[in-house]
Image 1 (tube, rainbow, N blue to C red):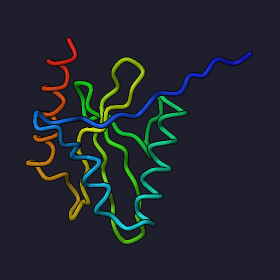
Image 2: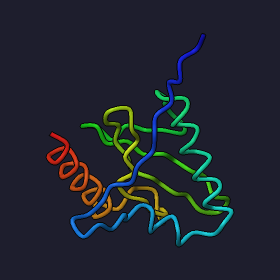
Image 3: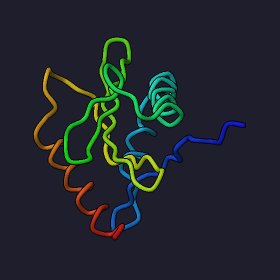
Length: 117
């Protein structure tokens, strides 16, 4: 008998109760939400997963790499207590992740880890 090994998915919450990754997803088209949701589900049920779908950004920060046709999305997350915690999401406009977005994801990760203790 196989045990359920999947991870649950939760959204990082700010002090004001906002969920930035959820808000970002809501702004996307239905098709884009479906692609990103499918990629998140693949991680949820198949963790651990590596490239090309998931890349480690070190220190517990990971990215889900979603191809949206002519655009590329990155969903930043961490794993904690059998949960995928969605921290931040972006549509990439260039080769590299903008430093401000990477720093914001790291800041949210740090805050989450502090509060989870």
